[in-house]
Structure formats: C-alpha cells, structure tokens
Image 1: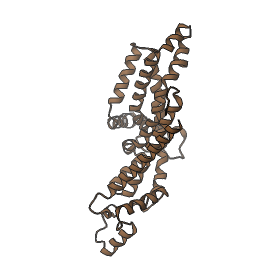
Image 2: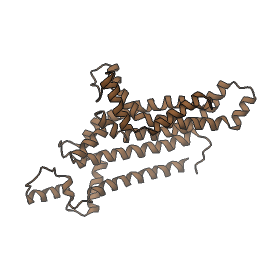
Image 3: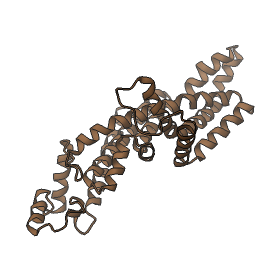
Length: 316
C-alpha cells in the first residue's frame, strides 16, 4: 500500500509538472510572447517601453530561465496580474472558484443519489418495465447534448412557464429557497450525463454481484431478499461508483465552462471564457493550472479510495 501511494503521488506530481510545461510552452509558441501580455488597444507603444516590459516579465532571458522564474512564482501563489482588470489573478480565481465548487457539489448530489438508486431498481427488477425504463433514461441522458438541454430548459421553465430563474446565482442576501431555485437548472444540466453513467454503472455492478456465488449462498441459507440486496449486493456493487465519484466531481469542476457560460454563473469556467474573449492570458493560464491541479488531485483521491474500499485489491 505504501509503495502504491508513493507511485501514485509521484505520477500526480509528474502530471502536474507536465501541465505547467504545456501552459508555459503555449505562451511561447507565438512569434513574440510579449503580445500575450499587451492589450490589443496598446498601439503606438514606444520601443523603450517594449524593452522595459520585456525586462519586467523576463522575456529577454533564455526559455529555461523564464520557465524557472515563472514556475517559482506560481509555487509561491503568484499567478501574475490580469491584463484586462489589473488585479491579481489568484484573487480573481479565489472570488469565482467557490461558486464553481458549490455548483459541482449540488450537481454531484443530483447525479449520484438518483443515479445509484435507479441503477439498483433496474438491476433487481431485471427484464421488467423498471429495467427498460431505467436503461432508456440512461441512454437518453448520455445521448442528449448539454447545450441543447440547457437552452431547452431556459425556454421551457424560465421563459414559457416562469417557474425558475433563467440565469446567474442568487445574491447571498436572498433566502435559502431562492438560492436553491437558482441552482436547479445549471445543476441538472451539469449532472444529466453523469447521472446516466451512475445508473448504468450501478446496474451492471449489481447484476454481476447478484449472480455471484456468495449471494447465491446467502439466499440458500435463507437470508431475506432485502438483506441480500442492501447488505451484501449493494455494499459490494458501490465500489465502482464510489471510486468514480472523485473523477465525476473533477469533471464537474473542470467541465463546467459551458454550463456557467450559458447560465451566467459567476464561476471559474465563466472567468475562463471571459479571459479568452479579453485575450487575458495570465488569467487563462491560472484557470488552466487550477483545473489541472483539481483533476490530478481528485484522480489521486480516486485511486486511494479504490485501494481502501476494495479489500480484494493488493498493491505491491
């Protein structure tokens, strides 16, 4: 177990280092790296000012020196300053990241609990109406484009029926009920595909466990059907959904760009979209680094969870 932990930790660090190399390399692929730090409306800038800017950002140094200087600043928490807003990038990310984490948490609950429950129902009601209904819903969930579902929900529930707010997050001064109403549509759209994945994964795991020898033995010894399902089968079938949950949560955090853009959610995904429109490379680089770090860390937690919850696994 210790050697596995060390290997996975080393792999996570190596992957994160690779992300920093890619981000830095992309910033130096253009003909002049200075262009990503100067706004498009900065015409007429003097040669003396250009040289001062090169010295200020270390662009007159060799590439390996620039990378060491940049990665050292990043490790200190210095992501630079936004070109568009002239504010620290880390401060801007800190203002938007909690909103993304909240949305991801709600979406994870919406995806995991109903998905696992319907997966169990579909498995224990094999070749029944509930089984066919569950598989049909799962197929629809994985085949439905998120952008189409988001626009459809806005048109139906916000415009036509006027039941839900169309966009953005409710101010903290609003009541808990109003704040939850603002979560419904973006969380549902974000959770729709993973919810279907939970259903299919739980169903397949339950079917495999229900056909195993220890379950047949439990039934032969007279254990009640409810105890077989909830105590023996589900407990073992939840291993795969549990270990996938960390990856799903990482996907919610890193894949919320489109949902936040459509629903005007003030999260880190919308910040990335705005930064790309403003040609604000320091902010975009900071967001990509945060996305990469979140995904690597949660993937590492998924590996650790799998090692802890499944005693059949032996890591050497």
